[in-house]
Image (cartoon, rainbow over all chains, first blue to last red; front, side, top):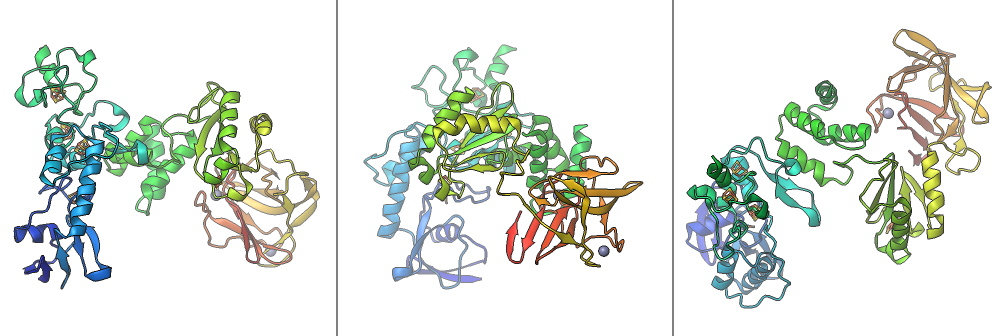
Length: 225
Length: 283
Ligand code: SF4
Ligand code: SF4
Ligand code: SF4
Ligand code: FES
Ligand code: FES
Ligand SMILES: [Zn+2]
Ligand SMILES: [Zn+2]
């Protein structure tokens, strides 16, 4: 067992526990985006940062990947943490201003300005869909491709995957793509066609901004027969 | 057959660190790109998901999913080369080849790419063609560089190329000189050893010029064959235990007159040679 201090409170947890889990145990809220229970931690979004150590030697770490250490002093809402966290949200908002999840985070953490150019990207590369597909659906149908600026998510060779099981897990878990699949009704946030078995995307040719990796669209397929 | 070829590669690299990358490197070296059916086969045989294999294949710049041309032209656009006129060189290349950076000419002769710093900033702007560096390149030289490359840069101009110099070697066991003045290659006495492969046994003369890969031999040694090399005087096998960094075949050590060791790869056609002249290593 390991004993550490979080926001002044002592807690004893099992070795190998992450700071995020330990903080949750004490009911200290830490926002997360790329972390979901049941999927391996990935540390991509930097939203869950906390401050560890004291004085000049303190530093920010991602709590979802950082394992507890004996005697560690952790602060989850210090000024430094709050400032950095708001910056992370502002950056995410620049990448994906259309994401409801990110908008909600922004309002919750009082991010009222947006100084970066809005990119309207459809992915923040959080890797949730990749882990969902690999770890829960055991499919490994999608993954990261390329690197740097050209890094993206998708199927190998960008062609219909023969191992995808059309479970919709990737869409379900994605924090950025609710708006990707609106077909010609941008005011409707999620098409959800596959989930509802209704068919919002009838003319496929117009529907080039398909959100999911279920190529071809499950709903359209259903509608056709 | 794709599957047999891949299983051979797997045999060679299985269980080693970086197994996947080594296999992909060999496929890339052989076909100048990673054909889709090979990636699929590698995934099946190594038990990895195609998604993972594809992720690795698209991550490294050394790999290409499109066929590359016979010659790879890399124009450096790193900071130093950029300020010295790299972009103008790249533009001129694009103009003369009629393609954009990242593309391959329709006749599959050239692939043009731009890179960020080749670590040779002092001699910039730098252009590298098939591993050969061109320094202080001016736009006026672009045509010449392309023409030279088309003729083949491996055809070394023995008299003018500074990378070429003769070495004199002797047997590591009996110290007898291996130089053979009767067989002249590249205008210099050659290095003569006995070679055996399969059922064949005979002599081979290797150019003594460091940087030249010219050989003449009694029997035509097929490319890719790994041969055993013996001293023609004491008949000891010249073998040291080191493996070729390029292909993994055993290296053949010889003593360099004046101090040092030269190691030649025992695989026909492999250029993984190392020259260690008392502290200064060339490869
Ligand atoms: S729908 Fe396909 S790609 Fe998405 S999680 Fe399921 S199996 Fe993976
Ligand atoms: S598609 Fe969605 S879940 Fe997948 S990496 Fe991008 S933002 Fe994350
Ligand atoms: S399968 Fe079709 S309906 Fe379902 S989310 Fe994808 S595009 Fe929308
Ligand atoms: S939740 Fe920890 S980095 Fe995303
Ligand atoms: S910038 Fe071109 S070699 Fe460094
Ligand atoms: Zn000898
Ligand atoms: Zn070799």
